[in-house]
Length: 336
Image (tube, rainbow, N blue to C red; front, side, top):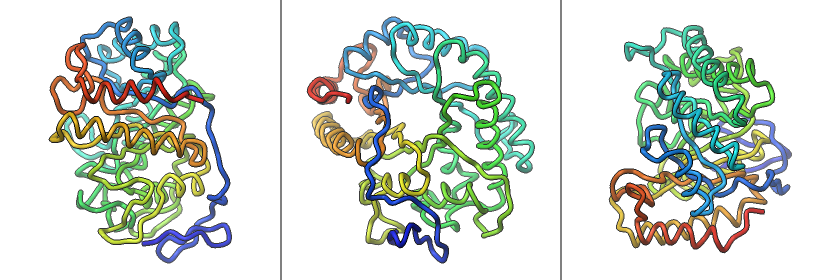
């Protein structure tokens, strides 16, 4: 599926979708471009994390939590330290489409209610400490319950599970409404993966079976996960065929909000040398596109994976080549 721009509309299968002119450059506010992922249960103290992030040239940090009191307590301590240090904490609300027994919610309303309550608890705790960006869900379009086949790129409605679509839509809406009910000025992101443009389009207008008339999901920031195996995000394919399309440009034109890559990396099987080269190349491509593609931040996954797979550190010790590649790039490129 190609995605040509025709008289202010994008062609998607048999429908014309309104959009802005993708040729118009758009740039979000500077200051948070270089970002990093981490986890609430790291053994690093908040003060240590602040020092580490400053040392690697990162000004933004993504961490997730549920409404579990222990998780919230850990993240609040991070938020307090980050607020004092002038760093940006992007909070991932880890709520999905399953209930406490592991079953998919039986419809949109129970999914909405659970997400709304969970989110209010989290935001109430974090609002006093300068958190202003919330990512509402983690790879919710890529759960066993929501994607029919993990090899599908997500560019067609038929890639997704129609029966569980209401639960996904309800969870997304509940998280966004939960944030806004406590902190109206906060920005909410919805996370997509691979080339899930039809999921992104559909939650705003229809279900996978083409039916419509549902409550729409509206977000302030489009967030995306892109790993090497998914393809080149600036020329990503669709269902194993070409031509590819520029996904951030599509999102800029279609949704008209800033774009954050909240996870990116190569695969865990790669050598240190390969990962170092990949980091340099990807950061270069992202940096070059930040002003034209409305890219607010790119957040590497992950700071410390506990082993020599994804992270650039292991237990406070740098993984030499990836760490050097990352820090060399941030040191030589201004976040402007």
